[in-house]
Every structure is written in C-alpha cells, then in structure tokens.
Length: 131
Image 1: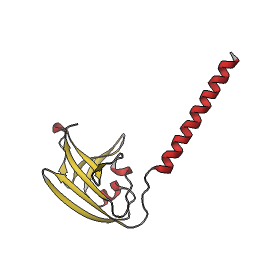
Image 2: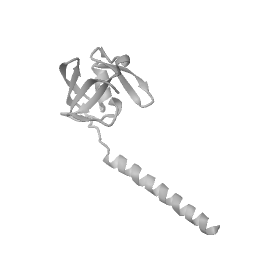
Image 3: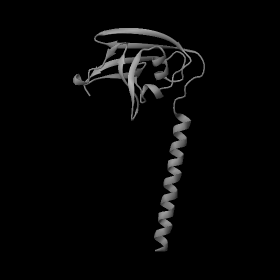
Image 4: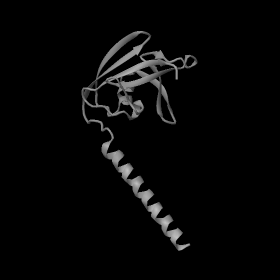
C-alpha cells in the first residue's frame, strides 16, 4: 500500500514537471510580435482575382491590423475571431467556403487575432471551398 502511494506521488510529480516544461517552451519559442510601426502586405485572393494591400500599422496582431483597415468582418467564436468576409467578399457557408490565412505561402497555425506581425510580413487571405 505504501509503495503504491509513493509511485502515485512520483508519477504525479513527473506529470506536473513535464507540463511546466512544455508551457515554458511554448512561451519561450512562440512567435513574438514587434512593437511600433510596421509595414505589412496582405493579398486577398478570391474568385480568380487578387488584390494586394500595403498597410502601415502599430497593431501587434494581424486581426487588429485587418480590422483597423476595415478589411475583415466576422464574429468572436470559441477559438477566437472567425473571419466571414474579406474586402466585402463573404464566404458562402452553403458552399463550404472559408477564409484561409497564410504567411508567405505557408499555413499559419493561429487565428488572425493571435497571429503576431512584424515589419515586412506578407500574408494571404484566400477564399477556399470545401472543408
């Protein structure tokens, strides 16, 4: 009985330490946004056309900059801001359309409101069909 309690305590301690290390790594290595004025480029790709916007902003995150320029509309959801419309082009849910965010051609792993921006970043907002 005593040996079982000791093993349970050690397993719990290892679990807590592992969680602390993982959280520390996430904070240490997660992308950081840049303070101050920065120039970013946002391309809107929809309906076989593309528009490029060059933006100067003090925003820390992409969502802030896009809202500042009136480029996006949407709503807050369980996972952050859900983009429904970009540059007055609204995704049609009946066609399973949605807005995909990429940075220099690579998928971003965060939503617009938690995607940090730095001077010179290039983002693409692409209207996709099919989940």
